[in-house]
Length: 137
Image 1 (cartoon, rainbow, N blue to C red):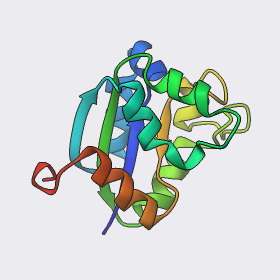
Image 2: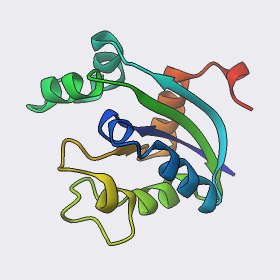
Image 3: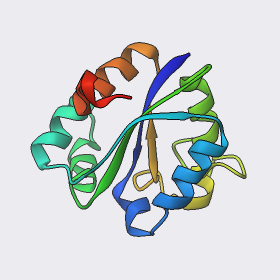
């Protein structure tokens, strides 16, 4: 079993897509080890996305992620990272495959509904950023 980290971003929460996305997570066979509704502060978002600090989109990303509530999740499944990334689709919803979460709920490349870890090391860091071990079931 492998763990991955996911976020249902503020745009999807505002669209009332949280329930359908959680339903999809369970239907795809992921176990939910941890889940929290958060409203990221600017500092939270800056810390979480620090790897992108030098990128031109960093400021917009921080503003967006701190603009409203989001749901952070620790997920588990066989090949969880690759499988979750398949389920969510390409970062740009215009390039996302039909049936993916981003194709269904994302507005554009910046407001793309969900996040998913890209590697085991990233997943471990991202999960630890939002959850203490005792909060994971």
